[in-house]
Image (tube, rainbow, N blue to C red; front, side, top):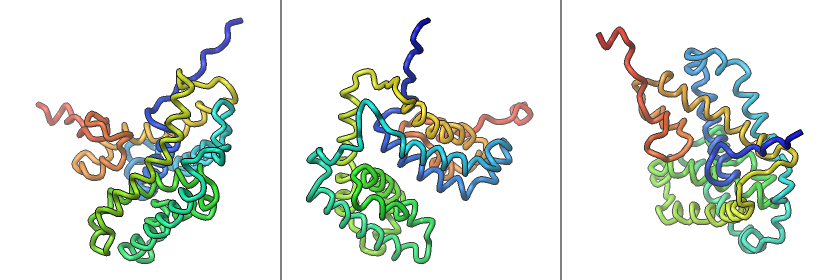
Length: 238
């Protein structure tokens, strides 16, 4: 009996960066659920809850080959680095609260609801900073109006990249970027799969709203499906 071929990742980049992007996209989906359900009923109902459950499972899945839970031994995420990460996160939260007062949902797009866990957990902190960096780039005009400088945004991105680099190096060490133990990659792919479905549906849900479609891009590649408008109906072509 042949051994099943290990499942490969469906996404590029690190696992932490993928999960951060998916969580940000999930936040947008909660606002747009009705629009997606109108395109495909399967994208409504329990879709959001199932996606969040998949993300939580992906966060907690043990990676037997990499053991990212042992990051206490990695100098990139200990001591001064974690203290700097905590200070940076708190600073970002302050400016978000100034720019978007009493907006808990917006704060959570920056990882505020994860901070208690992230404060002493390098893996969680990496995820939080990835989320915060992406959200801060999106909201940079509103944040700048409240005093969040371009240098602070650069520093946030740099710190997020430094912590994320640890994950990326570990993935590269595996060579094939695959694991056959415990279904770790399968769990990561499952969380990503929800985003893939929205990415394909976004151009139908928002055919005339390019700004909204951008929120459902899987990457910053120019040819991302969500960036392209839907093809005109056959009747309109006549």
